[in-house]
Image (cartoon, rainbow, N blue to C red):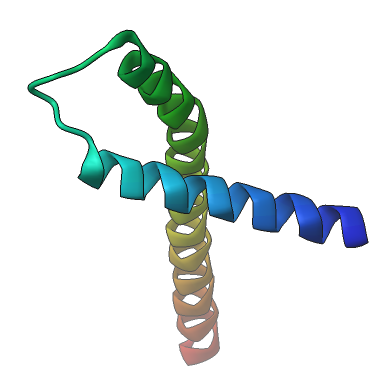
Length: 79
């Protein structure tokens, strides 16, 4: 449990630093270090974005299924 919490805080910190770096970088004067930073940011934020999208899609899918089941149950009870 302790290692999981430590990993979570590390990942949250990395995401926060990545977002702050994106606000700070001067895109008119990019160097190879900026390119390396963009790769690190992509490796950090792209999987996070994909997981958030997948969780949102599954949430709305489950919500729709529950709503349909509830309507079917109400239809059966009304007969």
